[in-house]
Amino acid sequence: MDILAIESSCDETAAAVIRDGREMISSVVATQIEEHRLYGGVVPEIASRRHCESICGVVNEALEKAGMTAGGVDAIAVSFAPGLVGALLVGVNFAKGLAFSIGKPLIPVHHIRGHIAANYLAHKDFEPPYMCLVVSGSHSHIVNVKSYTEFETLGRTIDDAAGEAFDKAARAMGFPYPGGIFIDNASKLGDIAKYKLPKPHTPNPYDFSFSGLKTAVINLIHNTQQRGEDVDINSLAACFQNTVCEMLTEKFIAAALENRCKKIALAGGVAANSGLRNALSAAAEKYGMELYVPPISLCGDNAAMIGCQGYYEFNAGNIAGTNLNAYATMSLDEVRF
Ligand code: KG4
Ligand code: ZN
Image: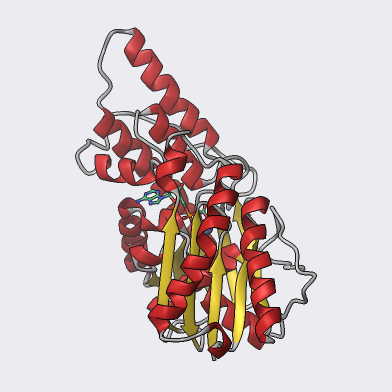
C-alpha cells in the first residue's frame, strides 16, 4: 500500500510516499526556519502563508521522486493535530481536496504518534509494545505504546517542553532560533561540572518541569554579568544539556523499570540531541534494555513519519471524511476526528 503523506503542523512543509508503513519511497521537507529566525521563534501567520506557497511544489516533488502520480497512490495521510491550527489547516485542506479528487481514503494522523512511528522506518523489525520518550519543541511525554494505535501517557511536562527549554536557554546564551542544536554543539566544548543547575521536582514522578531550569540559566547569566565576569557559554550549555538529559533519562528509565518494559524508544526533534542519545544508550546498557532511536534525519518534523503511522491508522480503520478539521491540541491517547 502506497501512502502519500502530508505534514504542515509547524514550520516545515513536508510530503512523502511510504510503502506498507515501513519503506520510504520519497521524502521532501521544505523548512521555513531562516525566516522565523528573524523573529526568534515561529510566527504562526507567516508559517501558514509559507505552507500555502510551498505545498503544491513539495507534494509534486515527493510524487516525482517516487516516480508516481497522485492518482497512483492508495491513500492520503495528513497530520491534523496537534500544532499551529492555521498551519495544520493548509495540509488538512490540501489532503482533503486531493483525496476527494482521486477518490482515495483520507487518513488523519496525530503528529506525535507520527514522531513515535519514525522508529518503524528506521528499524524494520521494531514493533509494540514498548516505552517511548517523546521530546519535541512542544511535547515531552513518557508514553506506554501498547500497540500501533493504543497509547497511554504516563508523564508529561507541566510547563515548558524539552525543546522549548533548549530554545529559551539558547536564546539567553545568545544563540539563534532554534537553539537546541547550538547548545548541543557548544556543550561538546564545555565543562559539565562548572555550573550547578537545579533539577525541579514534580508531584507525579514521571512528569517533567523545565521552566525553573530555564530561569536558573537566565539568572546565572545576569548575575555573572553584573559581577563584571564573563559567562563560559560552552560550559553553561554543557551543564544545561547534562541536567536536562539526566532528568529525562532518570524519569524515563524509572517508568520503564516500573512497567517491566525492556524495549524503549526515543522520538521527536530533541531526539537528535547527542547528550540524550548517549545518556539513554548508557542507561539501556546498564539495565539490559533494547533502545531504538530514529536517525537524525527523521527526528525533526517530516512527512515520512506521518505516512508510516498513517498505514497503521488505516489498518485500525481510522479513515476521515471531508469534514476533517485541524486541532491545536489533542491527547495522544484519545484521538478524535
Ligand atoms: O519535533 P520538532 O522538529 O518540532 C515539534 O514538533 O516541536 O522539534 C523541534 C525542537 C526544537 O526545539 C529544536 O531546538 C529541538 O527540537 N532540537 C534539538 C536538537 N535538534 C533539534 N534540541 C536539542 N539538541 C538537538 N541536537
Ligand atoms: Zn514535531
